[in-house]
Amino acid sequence: MILGDFAAWNIQNIIIRVVVAAILGGIIGLDRGMKHRGAGTKTITVVCLGATLVMLTEQYIQINFPGLANMNRLAAQVISGVGFIGVGTIIISKHRVRGLTTAATLWASACVGLAVGIGFIEGGILITVMMLVSLHVLPFVERFATRHSRYCNVFMDVEKSRDLHIVIQDLKEAGIVIDSMEMSESRDAGEEISVHMVLYVKKSMERTAIYDILMKSDKVVSVDFL
Image (cartoon, rainbow, N blue to C red; front, side, top):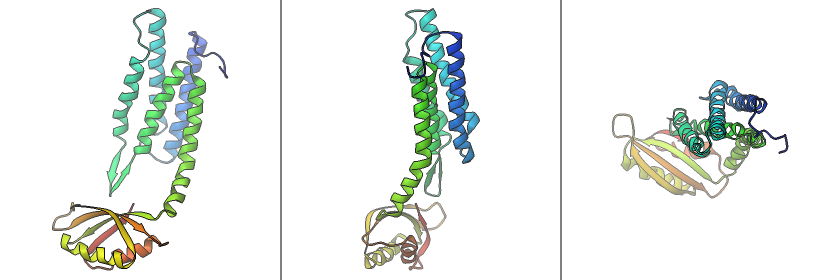
């Protein structure tokens, strides 16, 4: 153990585990809370503490009731059960799925609580640090990759399905390849069709230029980029 032996069952270690779980859960939750996400400091701290209590209870049963404890059973229930909480943070709005990162953070914070609860504090701290690094660094990497990607996700509404061929022709003339395309009925009343296209741009082209090409036809109602 780098920080010490926290796996031993005594009141000092129990207090240390609970306090560390509250601190780590609070740090993770604070990051989400500052960004005004669905699950903030209170939610993630409580999840982390609850998972810690589960592992403390498992160890308590194993020590005081030998042969009756299954160290994997309750932990497995926590890992699967937290998924139900995470589902409540996921929202689909305007072709975008929001809340997946918050749901994943909730699940990971429960795993941190399980690790700390059994005394593997080093693992809990390490994962917390790496989670914070991932949440802050990877968005910049993703935006950089997106800006330099030749692929582009487009959602648009057209008045009628037969008007789509005009848009396709305009894209071909501009040298833009349609990698894939899906159509569905628009939520609005009438004959409008919602189209999701993945476009491949052979040469460097700004999204504003692609937008102008798509809106060239008066049959296109709206265009949204993902």
